[in-house]
Image 1 (spheres, rainbow, N blue to C red):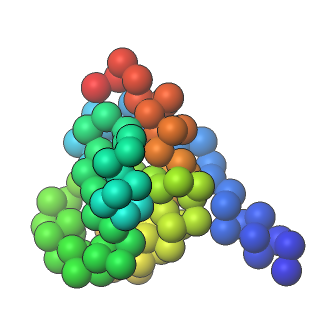
Image 2: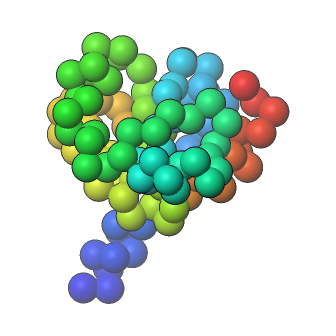
Length: 106
């Protein structure tokens, strides 16, 4: 059971520079009030409970998607849903981590 949780939150090192160079979209899946309190630069807010209704539009963009939230749990769920739909999606963990990685790279 412990390994399940380790794998759920495990993220390999993402190459943000490469993904952003390919036009990656950063999606924050927290609620609108959480997003309003702070978010990664250039990220858009699509709450987790609405991500499935946006799959068609996201797929049409044909761009990698970097997903973040507060801790990575909701991002993991969203990434899995998007990957199942054939979208290149990555769980980047917390929005703070994303912000730190992209600062000055866009």
